[in-house]
Image (cartoon, rainbow, N blue to C red; front, side):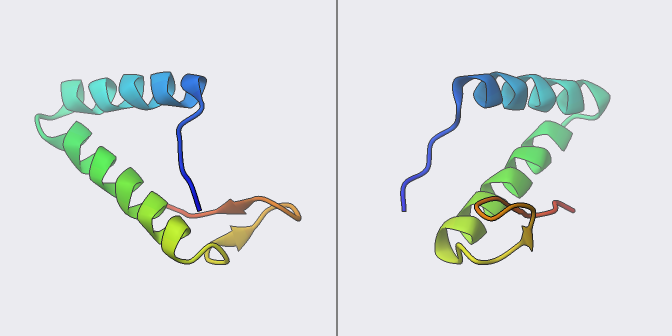
Length: 62
């Protein structure tokens, strides 16, 4: 399975990382780590997470 960010999602992710980093040094990096772990989980186990629609699943972050 292949993964890539939609361009708008990439912008939102970058913005979110900056937001969290402004709140507390290192928090943006922790957020990115959580995102990357969720992506790795989804790639390794495509059927994991909560079923939202017939094709979409959700993985919650800590």
